[in-house]
Length: 407
Image (cartoon, rainbow, N blue to C red; front, side, top):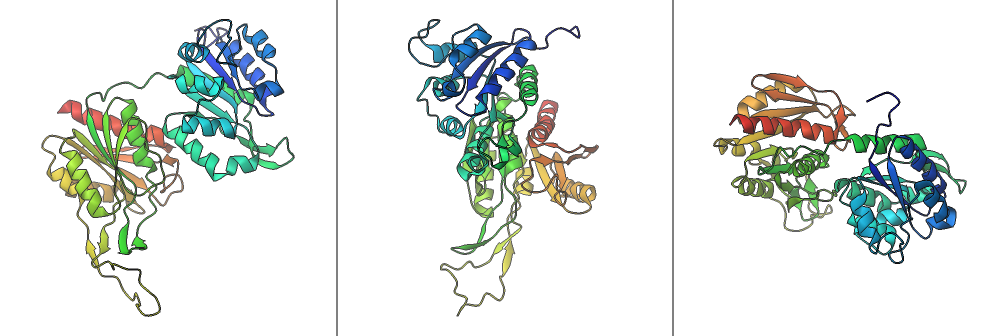
């Protein structure tokens, strides 16, 4: 491609403009996308039109704005036709209200109906007051949309229109346009795991001391959920056996919820009987109280001086013992001697590979959105740099795919 040739010529972008003070910046995003060669159409809420009129976007796009489900001069079913036309839907500025509707599947106006009908990638650029952005409901909606595959250009910190200072300010126009162009340039995930039945374990386990107290660890399940989501996108039939976590189930994934190590052991073995491969990311408790109380223990007269523990069943080892030609990949979360410990685990368990990560590092600890892993196999160690969880997930799935192909 010549240096002066638009990089996204012929790509179609549906610009969904919501009712925020930053709605005027959607015009600048539109022009940046057109400069890159994109064809753009606009969809607007009634509130957005209070900030910037529909004629502005009609003049810029030379196409009717989708702002009503009835009376569109170009189509009788605008929300369907606009959705099917688009290669990318870009929501800017995304308000808390519209994100909540997207997360809940509400389609009570032309914009949300169109977004609900979209099968193309969706990029969301939020812009709102700092308190609205920080609200747990908004953050939960962001996580839900991300779990379903929506991408985000997160807001930045700055002085907001109301005078408050904090995160919530719409990201720079250049950053939003660049993210949209990058997403348009992405290839669809290769369907290299079609007809593969994959078991993924994720999250912590909770080992009961009494009905209200338990032993656990800091695992959030993010890595396992990222692997399950990526595997589904690559065509696998995924069963996710999950310990307690607040994460929404990835789209297209069957989730089995468990609490204890014993429950996870039983669920994992049951799912593995009908699987081609397993990826064990769960941080399963190594020990569980031998005799959990059947009532809440009272400190005044039931002193908990010690807890007698017994070892839990080894899920990874038991899956490996039942491999019979199938692929099993485990994880090793370590705080020291990362590679030697992972190599020892590989030999002891009999896994095809161990994914080792140092959880003492801020960039690969429990709850981080990045991970720095080493792929440990019998034939060597492949150390990777710190990457987003989605990229690490594809590294792990490449290991599974390659082992399956060899067999």
